[in-house]
Amino acid sequence: MTTQKPILEQQMSQMQIKLKSSGIISNYNESSLLRDEKDEEMSRSALAMFRAKEEEIEKKKMEVRDKVHAHLGRVEEATKRLAEIREELEALTDPMRKEVSMVRKRIDTVNRELKPLGLSCQKKEREYKEALEAFNDKNKEKAQLVSKLVELVGESEKLRMKKLEELSRNIEALP
Image (tube, rainbow, N blue to C red):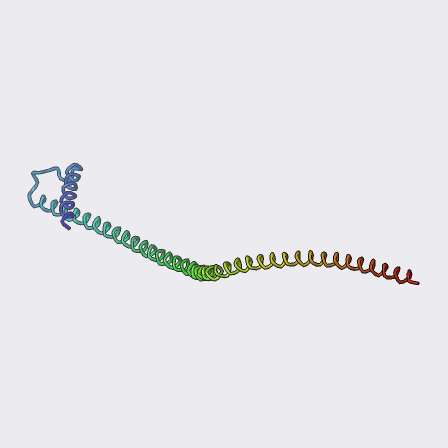
C-alpha cells in the first residue's frame, strides 16, 4: 500500500493537469465555492479512477495467482507421475539385478568346485597316460616274447622233425 499512495497522488496530479488543459479549470477568479466543488469532484473522479484501476490490478493479480496455482498443480502432478515412472523403472531393473547377481554367485561357486576337479582330472590323465604307456610297453614286450616263442617253437619243431627223420632213417637202416 505504501507504493500505491505515491501512485494515487501522481494520478491525481495528472488528472488535474488534463482537466486544466481541457479548459474545465480555466477561470481562477471564480468563487472559491465553485472551485472547491470542482476540486472535490475532480478528487472524487480521480479517486473513482484510482479505485477502478486498483480493482483491475487486484483482478489481474488474482488471475495470475490462479494461473500460477493451476500451473503449480500441473507441475506437482507431473512430478508425482515422474516419481511413479522412476519407481516402476527401478522395480523392473531390480529383479533382473537380483537374478544376475544370483547367477554370478552360482558361477563363482561352480568355478571354485571346478578347480580341484580340473586338477584331479589332470592328475588322473597323467596317471592314465603313464599306465597306458606302461601297458603298451608290456604289450610290446609280450608281443616280442610271443614272436620269440613262436620262433623258438618253430625251430624246436624243425629240430625235432629233423631228429625224428634221422631216427626214422636209422630205424629203416636197421636190418
